[in-house]
Length: 529
Image 1 (cartoon, rainbow, N blue to C red):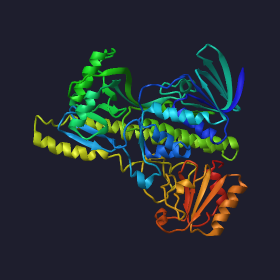
Image 2: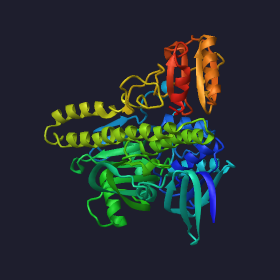
Image 3: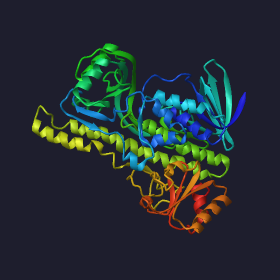
Image 4: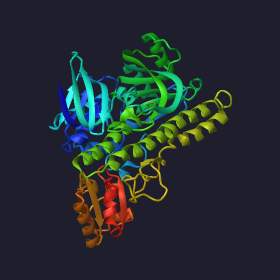
């Protein structure tokens, strides 16, 4: 039996489901193949950034996501870092949010277990008539030619069928079967370190930490003998549920008693605990050499995987889904060209490669260098000075982590620019950068007016210039919404009167007048030249 879809998504985790929502909202006929019938109880991927919350806003489920939170609002979303165990006198709080969320993003960040995020996403996906879900099915083998893709899938009851599609996206995890079949290699940094993940319940640990330090959502113990690798505690709820990551020095699986002892050593105190899950993972950063092979794409952990440091993983995967989703929909509907979908790999791969190497691996190496230096029992005065300087560097990512696509082939960026994870948050509208929110004369925010396709923001701009771009887009069948307002009341901070914004809220062009080649501009940003 064979069924034809426009897109098949292999893997129904949060990234695969988010991609299906992005496509389904645009009326694209797609299927999601997912072997799990129920959600994983492991509370990973908890920190969702302001940028990720913007996606949930545009999917119409931001309120549902916030309602699924499992910790009180007064818990800090940042992390408490200590030298030694958690009872140490050396501690410092580090905010996780990168940049100023109120000024540069339309939504504030959120924190909740990944299974709650998935529950909200699955409920939204179920409302979309153009999305077919195939729970209990696994993608086995893939073939493609210039006209389409054929995927053989098997059910957990032993049955098989073939799915035909125009495009396929593998969101099937770090050990992606599809990625290997289409011949995409990975590279990166392997730290050759095995890690243990434990999920447990302990009210005694909660009481011990509350008595010792301000309440926080996450705690990190920096023990010198661990060479920069974290022992990391994260809250799942307000009083008793936790997850814990730590280096595991043996290839053998530890029993509950051994894991409990490891957790107590990191905490610096003894406490009763009930363990719900113990698992293992390998400390490495891996990035695929390309995110596309013909009509097959990879996204999320299938494209990039790394240690759960800094909250990059799930957020990066959801950004993949949004970036690729609107481009596939545009290509299928006919107004987007091949260069539009080619730009997915061109834009997203450099961002995560730098994220993995410069913001994750570098952090581990910096921590190792610090811990291999002077210790407090050797020279307390010198260590106190060193600790103070190291604490100042804890937030080194904040001013520099600003993913942008200045060098993209579908963006009118500056000469010689590249796509990068390094940048600077600015309200100024810049081609290739995320658009900052802005209050309009109506009292609404500009983000409430952005369209599902392209939006031209015209601020006190000449009507002839606006009309010229409208006519050009219409003649080329590229959907364009125009938002007009005055160039006043703070909107001058954009430093331009015309801003062309693509469906994922990234700017592709700015100017004060009609471009010399309006047709060429529209062709470029829609991937047709």
